[in-house]
Length: 417
Image (cartoon, rainbow, N blue to C red; front, top):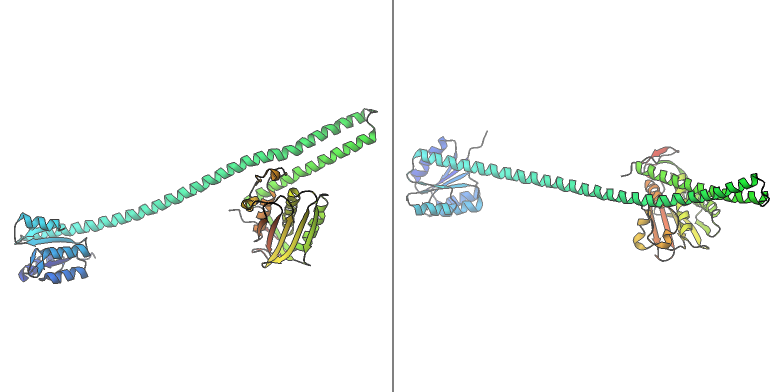
């Protein structure tokens, strides 16, 4: 049921307020009355009326004072002034003070009813307008928020596309160089080997069989090594694809990282005669992890150290308990890493702007792959360096990664965000 409009009638003549109250109650208004200007001011401060009908002249004050109190406390309330003086001056004075309309006493009943009805309708329309304005403001704020969110999302996607385009161009540049180099070498050595085979098959005395076979063997060994390099590049690209599509799998089991470090050091030492690889370790440092993937990480870290270290340098692998897990550290005596690049080196296709570092072969995949493997074990990877010479790459693996399940059960990685 709709609430009755509340009306306050103020006049110092008792008969006037009684008569007006009776008329307005017949029209369904909830009418309050007073003959005191002071009391009227008190009432409008305590109660919000839809309409106030007040005499312009009161014994204990002025109707304009009542109007002022209404405007100060409830500016949406409609005020109609009553005056016994049919003068333009009094009407203008009331309207200028903020009154909605005025009536001259004595007024016709129908004129009183219609004027009050218009005032109440004005009040209703004002309230509805303010409600609609508030709704529009809220809707506008909501729309603006959505626009801002959509704009931010589009901007983020645009930046991602720019980064992908940059990485694509960088990949094409690096890949063309890294893949072309072994292919060119293989092609050259195969041509020489073929020429020697032809000469041997033709019985050329200038090319003794033993010497010819030795040369062919050496060239085929180079081809074999370059083929291995190509295979590793393809494997790394496949690893990146599996990581980014969430198809990389982990088989968890107990892994002794001290034992793993010894194995990697022994095997990697066979690949270099210009560096010494040493291991500092405790007796046992066991974690629940995917052994093959952690071996891949350690291989990448040691390969990186060999690549950027001068001949005769020492590479140290250290394994020790740390922060509830086990830390693997690989320290070299190489060219160092500038502070601003300590995080960047783990980015996809990262290539150092330093000329000496750029001369080292590679597509910038190894450390990126290592980081992704470590993160998926619930661990972290970071670099430390003085910036000029020497650096340490650290990996911290928790004893039991969240979500790890034993025995060796393949666990697909969550899709990369």
